[in-house]
Length: 121
Image (tube, rainbow, N blue to C red; front, side, top):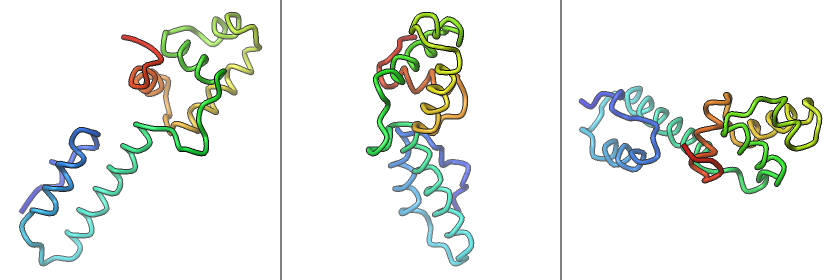
């Protein structure tokens, strides 16, 4: 029987994981089938959050600028000075970006910005 640990939440392998689940040995235990399906659903949701913004909440131009500066390693104070806004405004932009992208850390925001072409390594 296939081990659930082989299913990784990476965009490149999501389709392969689904194919592997479909082709897996028949499962007589309904709870195992449910666990497999639940795992794939969690992975699919994670991938969708990582790869795109929801259609109804795209980043504003100022949020994109803030994200780019965050990804480029600037501090909140430096971003505020460069954008000629308050530190609180930068913090608000960061919270809005995190909410819209589903990211929960600056490291994840940086990775997201690189994927979207807003920053380079």
